[in-house]
Structures are given as C-alpha cells and as structure tokens.
Amino acid sequence: MPLIWAAVALSGTLSATATTLPIPLALNDAAKCMLGILKATPGVTEARMEVTTDHGRTYPHLEFRADQEDRWVQPFRLEPMNLSGDLKPPYIFMIRAPGIWGPDGPDFHVTDAVMVKANSQCGVHAVYFTM
Image (cartoon, rainbow, N blue to C red; front, side, top):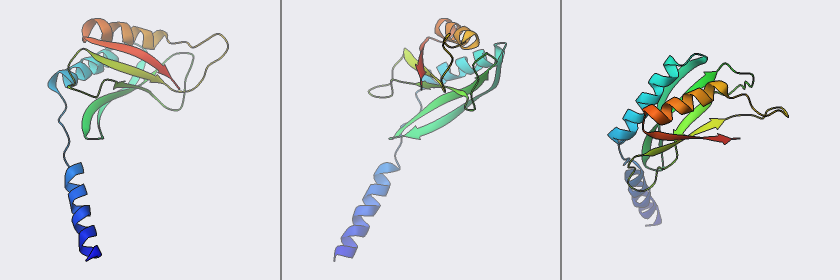
C-alpha cells in the first residue's frame, strides 16, 4: 500500500509542476524592443533573447556583451524583476553586471546607453545589479 501511495503522490506532483503561465504579451514586446536596442547600439555584441521558466513563470531575458573597459567571461544579463502578481507593466528589468572592477569604478558607458534607450523607448525601467 505505501508503494501505491507514493506513485499517486508523485504523479500529482508532476502534473502540478507541468503547468506554466505564458509570457504576457506586453512583457514579450518590451523584451523584443530592448533586443532591437541592443542590436542597434554600437559596442554591443552577441545580443540574444532567451526564454526561462522558473517556479511556474515563463519570462524572456536578454544577454549581451559590451565593448567597454570592464569585461568578464559571462555576458551582461537583462531580466525582469517583477515576476510576481499580475505581471502588468511597467516592467523593471535588472541588468546583471558580472564581476568586479578596479578602484576607479566600472566603465559602463555602453550599458548606460542601452539603459537610457530602453527606459525611454521600451516602457521599462532598467536598473543595475552587480554581483
């Protein structure tokens, strides 16, 4: 009898986690807008948009490399922060800046240009998050 109960419990868990919410159209449009900005910004390379599913939420994120003084193995990553609740705009996108920099601070002139354009053209609020 315990073996049957475990199988029922497991099948219930699998069906519950198989359900994910679709990407809201406005969020997808904002990400596509930012991808266009990344591809058009001088000094940005390897810009791409991918889709992530985490805790039942599906959302787009963007990755890119920037030709600036501070460079890292990992690319910069732009991902939405407000993934709880009803997912209505305006969306806050966090730019993850990997690595550390020297005593003069980071050189983010390319990513700064991306943030200004994204904030003014895509209806988002982009902020930095350094790791």
